[in-house]
Amino acid sequence: MPDSQLPIGVFDSGMGGLTVLSALAKAMPHEQFIYLGDSARLPYGTKSADTVVRYARQASGELVRRGVKALVVACNTASASALKTLAEDYAPLPVYGVVEPGAQAAASQADSSGVLVLATESTILGGAYQRALLQQNPSLEIYGRACPLWVTLAEQGWVGHQAAALTQHTLEHGLRGFIEVGSRPNTVLLGCTHFPVFRQQIETLVGAGVSVVDSAQTTAAVVAEDLSKHNLLRNASTATHQMQFLATDGVERFRKVGGYFFGGALSHVELVDL
Ligand code: DGL
Image (tube, rainbow, N blue to C red):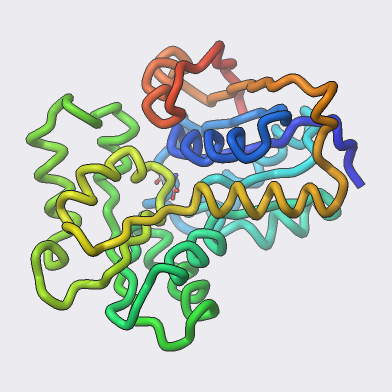
């Protein structure tokens, strides 16, 4: 088994996975983390599954080479296409994805009106969320909508008050058909790590009575529970909290804009070449 003193490796195609990292750090306050954002090759969500698997292997390889005790694939697109391959590549290293925890979170809220999954093209077309949700509840009504432009807006830091009109219009376009209609699903699943930065606007658009969920908290709970079960958590009395950030391009922009996703300022971001 891996050394429990090592950090936990987390990767995403860009900054979106920082929303998952933030939840992981809250769930496991004594752990150290290395986060890799593959900003040079984002978006993953418009690429073929083969390409996403190749990129995910390279990003994971970098983290594993640096020494990690577990790997969290904090990217829905990579989790959907590459999780099985990565788990096989690195066994017995524990490898966790975000799709199953996200499906769990959504299925626990959904009633007979169903779930609307908002994600990248690749995630929606590959059907991983649809399968994971049906595993939770075989009679669940599932709707899927690809919202690739949301990734671009989020990654550019066009959240909150900046460019409010354009962001609002793009969010409305993504949710067309699900705003203010009588029979809309009661649960919206943010199946892309970039989307939680728009949670407030999405909640306002879909209106009261609709739960907006994402996979960050459920993933963090799954990882914390599993690492604890395998005695892989650090000793709380001696441990210090540490974060290391890596990106494959635009490190200064990554550091500045990443704060929106992480919910706090990022320290130094190291440039890596995969
Ligand atoms: N972070 C990716 C996800 O969660 C989406 C961004 C991309 O297209 O690269 O699916």
